[in-house]
Image 1 (cartoon, rainbow, N blue to C red):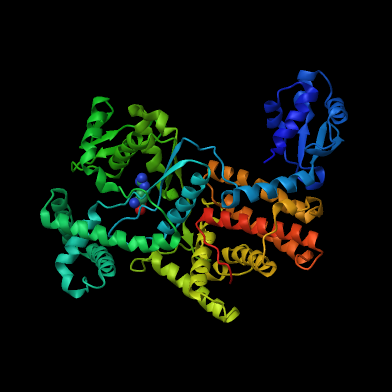
Image 2: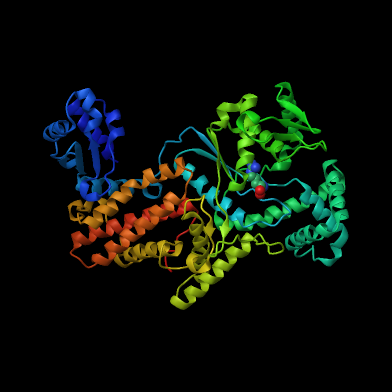
Length: 569
Ligand code: ARG
């Protein structure tokens, strides 16, 4: 596809003899479309050309070719050039590219030959699947797909919290109350209830905590019965998570969690010792980080056990060796910021600085209700992600029953709309903001929501169905697609690839979510103002092709967020 920015830079380069790469960097997007598609600030060249910016502007305008080139028109405003691109060329290029690339339109190769590791979801086994894990699962799942579209070899890791005192608690709870629960048929719920009950009762009764410690110690010592039980809990938990992951289209290439690193930490502790980084402090072994104004990173507690940070450092080094990654993205809540800063620093001191530079903690805000109150924090009121998704599906089904009772495959549509709505709500605002979880907004078919975007997509689909053919791109007369709203849409379609690149650079799926709402709204305006089917054949073909292109991009973009699109709704 033609790269307009580059093309313009090359043309300016021809008349100024300054290399085009430099010029490309200077090109700006003007604040308003009536000021052109690109603007060039001539004062950047004043020193080199030894001329005043307005004179430079005049000269470039006069000498540049605008006949049959990427540039249609240039205006001089003081020291600025306002540059208007060739609209026919734009429309033609975009639509031909979509025709060629089909469902890979917008993908690029900037990550080719590189590996991106995305660590996300990572729930704590045996503990409730906290609603915060919805966010990491959805944001991480989207980033996984975005990096993939950028051409990276992408590795998804679910760093399960599958080791820790929580297992001791569940095992102690099992010892005490096993017979009160239906472990056979309702195992995952029973385990969860036992964990929650144990955590409650332990507050009044310190003996319980000792009991949990004893059980965990047994697990650490490799006791056979305890290990078997641990394996069983881990297994049924993963089975349960997988139901949710399937609904959300989350994909993982590895489930190596904290437990996987149990027998690998000794080496790392040794390495720390050899490099002279460990210090004794109140019986614990720490890495001092005072020079960075950070609290020390504890490696071995005074009780002689390793901790969360020890495992993270070990996992990092293991991933360096396994994947030689070019990027490692940790999708973890903002409350763990300090933890990441600390263990990144420790790794730097150990000599892994090159790899630390490639790693980034991608934090996100809390999930709150519409009054701003944190959801899912109340004890005993734990939320299963699967339940939330099912609720969304049921609610969508009700809406569909009301609006379109004769729709085929209602269950499938309800699943796509319900799950899509949850995903979209999570991704629409920049991730660091708290997510407001409010059913009325999430499932609103109007406004900036998933269902709205799907609804517009369905419109493109039904237009195509009504026409019953996709026009042959070679027969499309691009000159007929020149209205302002069409050009606006074509420009957005043109920007899709850059949008994906930006979303990847900033690890921010909301950039794509916002783009999609923008595109859907533009299509809606186009659709409301123009007859698409029933116009004279040539105009119909042109508008129909644009409709098809818009639907294609909406679907690709939604897919990058993890959403599926219904064909009808
Ligand atoms: N299991 C942790 C939790 O739920 C998240 C793990 C985050 N990842 C990491 N590498 N520490 O809080």
